[in-house]
Length: 327
Image (cartoon, rainbow, N blue to C red):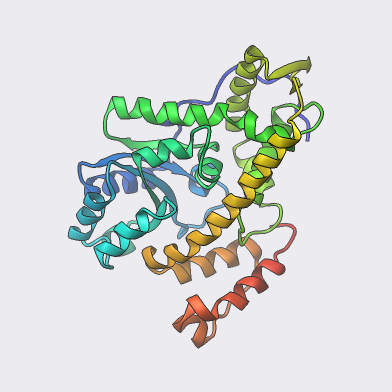
């Protein structure tokens, strides 16, 4: 993929300036109110923000940054927004953060949010130079809105975390790019690498579709990253709107980042087990997503519905092996 000309020398808009759908903003505000004083910020990403063909009943994708897990879960429990034992949520939150919960105020009539809940220090680490895995990084380098934040100071901190994640892209993408590139080809390749870092029940071209829905945002963000990369001597200009790395990744660097993505995929897959514990009605959500993204009709057996943690695995393998190349 190649661009049509030089990219503008700008950066991505601040998260607080990214337009958010009205329903997503309402859900973020209600969630912050229900979660108590310890909610730091609520960020939005995903298909509703990007207008990537979401259905009316599709969940809104939110990241909830909190000071501490226990007070947040207790506040939601007292408001009747979570229904399983508190110790389960508090325990799961500390293992492979973030955890996922469903937020369905007004018994779901106001819509549903799929919320990644993460503590403030873990959020900063996940977007830093040595993230434990790529799960949050792969989402937060894309188009992100900030529909609710506790204070101007917290907004500045969130924005700093996002910008550090943006400028860190050059380091982990270096082993995956050869020759010269522009913002379009680099952006498309970046999402491809991120999507391959997880086992996802989606068609093979999903990363291309997602890139297309936010090409302007990613182009603006990468233009700023590339400009800073040239100033630091990491990148070189080789023509109108084209760049290359000033030096190739060493074999040791390439091995390190490839190991990072393999380890990340393992951690992301391990999270499935705790999502089953913390995400209400996870089975209908997953089967609906598979049907939307692959076009396959999923008819579960009684055993698969009754004891999915044991009997659903053959179905999972079947879906992954039969995913179409195109959505």
